[in-house]
Amino acid sequence: MAIPQHARTQLLHAASADAYADLVHHGARRVAARVVRAQSAGPFTGISPDALAAEFAGIDLDVPLPDPDTALDELERLYLRDAVWFHHPRYLAHLNCPVLLPALLGETVLAAVNSSLDTWDQSAGGTVIEQHLIDWTARRIGLGPDADGVFTSGGTQSNLQALLMARQEACGGDLSLLPRLRVLASSCAHFSVTKAATLLGLGPDAVVSVPCDAERRMQPAALERALEQCRRAGEVPVAVVATAGTTDFGSIDPLPEIADLCARHDVWLHVDAAYGCGLLVSPTRRALLDGVERADSVTVDFHKSFFQPVSCSALLVRDRSVLRHATYHADYLNPKRMTERRIPNQVDKSLQTTRRFDALKLWLSLRTLGADAIGELFDTVVDLAADGWELLTADDRFEVVVRPQLSTLVFRWAPRQHRARQQDLLDAANLHARDALAASGAAMVAGTVVDGRHHLKFTLLNPETTTADLAAVLDLIAAHAEAYLDLAAQAA
Ligand SMILES: *Cc1c(COP(=O)(O)O)cnc(C)c1O
Image (tube, rainbow, N blue to C red; front, side, top):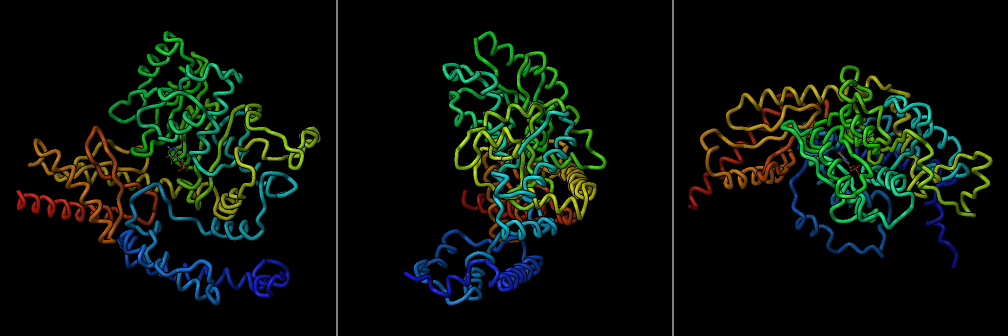
C-alpha cells in the first residue's frame, strides 16, 4: 500500500521543517493563552472525573480530525480547559514547580532532534552535555574525583538503581542472602524505597523503619540501635537511606551523624535529595546539606526544586565502578569492544535503554539563567514557608506540625474550642475542606496523615506565591471546614 501523501508531510524532514516550526509556534501560542487565562480563573476548574469522562464520549480514535487546529480545539475541551496549572500562585498541593522558559526551549529542541542518550552513536554532543551536568552536580555535592552518574526518569528510578547497586555490593550476586538483606530508612522516607526493595527481591520486612524526632528527622541513636539489632539477628544491612527533604515535611535527616554510623558499620549511604537538591544552588542555605558529600549515592530531582519540566532527574555515585551493576552488553548496541575503545555509551550505566535527552533542559537553564538564579528562586519559596509558619502559629484556628526547613507546611484546621474532643470530626472537616477547595477551583492543597490524623499540606514551589495568598487560602479552608461542622451539627 502506498503511503498517503498526507501522512508523509506529517513526518519531520527537510520538506516539512517550516511547517514543523509553525506548528510548534502555534501550539505554544495556545498554551500561552491558557496560562494567561488560568491566572485569573484559578489553578483548576474543579471538574469531576465523571464530568470529564462524558467529554470523551463519541471520540473515535480510528477516525482522525481534518487538521491540527481542529485537534487542538478538541484538546482544549478534553485537557487544557480543565488542566491543573502549577504556575498558579494558589496551586499549593504537590511537589510540582512552575517551569523555566529556557527549560521549555530545551524540551522543544530535544523532542524534535529526538536524540536517544543510550549510545554515543545516537546522541554525540548530547552525551557530552549530560556528562558535563553529571560532573557539575557531583562537584556541587562534593563526591570526589571518582564520581559519576546518569540522568533518570525520576527519584523513584534513582532510588531503585541506588539500592540495586547497594544490594550487589553487599551480596556480591549471592542471591541466597536476599531474605536477610535490610534497608534502613526513616519513618518519613519516600515509599519508593519500599517499592525498590520489593522489586529487588528483598523480603516484605526488608525495610527497617527508623523513628524520627519531633522535627521528623531520623534519630541517629535509633539508627545505631537498628544497625546493631540487624547484626545480632544475622541480617545484612545493605544501605541506609537518609532523606534530604522528606516529601511531607521537607525535613533533612542529620547527614553527618548518619554518615558516621554508616562508616563505622561499613554500610552504603544513599541520600535521597529528590526534593532538597535545590539547596545545592542556594546562595544562603547550602549548609543544610552538609554531610551529603559522604554519600555513596545521591538522588536529585531537578524536576522538583530546579524548576525543570517533568522528567529531569539524576542519580550520582561516589565510585563510578559501581555503575557496572547496570552494565549489560548487546552486540547490536553497545558491544564490549566499544568500552575498550572508550566510546561513552551511557546505556552502560542506566536502567533504561532508549532515553530522553532531559539533561538539555537543565543545560539551557544553567547557560542562560545560571545556578545562583535558580538557587535564589528556591530560597524564595523556603522564605515563604517560614512566613507561612509564622502565620499558622499565630492563628488559633490551626495547628502546625513542624517549623519547615524547606518549603512545605503541614497543618490541621483545629480551632482551639474543638481541640480536646471531636478529633474524628476534625479529621472529616479537614478532608472535606481539601476536596471543597479543589472543587471550587480557588486553590489546591495536599493532604496527608500525621500520627493517625488527617492534615493539610502546602507544598510551596512557586516564587510568585505571596504570604497574602497563603493567608487567603487559610481563610478559605477555615470557611469550608466550619461549613462542614455546621452541617454535621444540624444532622446530629
Ligand atoms: C518525589 C520524591 C521521590 C520520587 O521521585 P519521582 O521523581 O516522583 O519518581 C523520591 N523521594 C523523595 C524524597 C521525593 O520527594
